[in-house]
Image 1: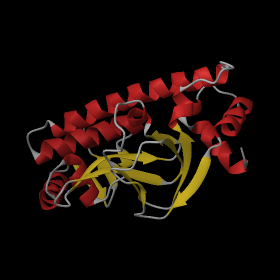
Image 2: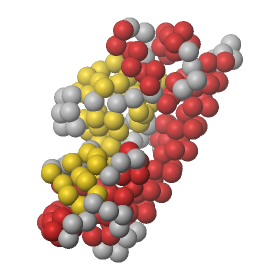
Image 3: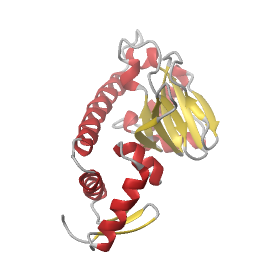
Image 4: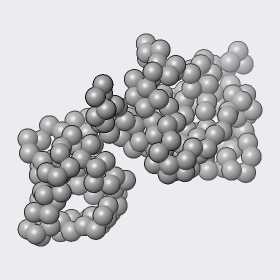
Length: 222
């Protein structure tokens, strides 16, 4: 593991694992590193599922494009987080979604079969890795439930407030930045962009929120 890989210590995949054990895993797994530029596809829907991806640096969006080119933004993944564990541990043979870099992003590719298939030595650090992978799967399921909560709201206004309230609690502050621009937020909440902008303007006029681009301030609990 070279010097750049020390940032992986913050990744939930390596929780409760000392640096020497992580070094052994990197050597055992022959992990590959690749850098992607902004808006470049890291994974495209339909590609064979072969790896678990660790976002070492940068930001990526999980998206789904339908037949007519309409895009749904499923989630965003920032540095030190993981993509693909759920798909690697499923009956899918190809990725049903795409992963797109939203800025210059460095990815570590980990052979999925090695993550879920302990070696013959039954190493403790590999067993810890599997436990961490299962915990990540559980957390991702919770995240999907959170998104369903936003989308289940009847109006665009209620979807916005649900999302902003959730994000405020997530960072434990009424003053925060979201990882989406306007179109991306509209895609994430499955609403029309113009309707989203209109409702944001109303909420600002009513003194419920304040914002500048992706910086938001909640004025009071709604």
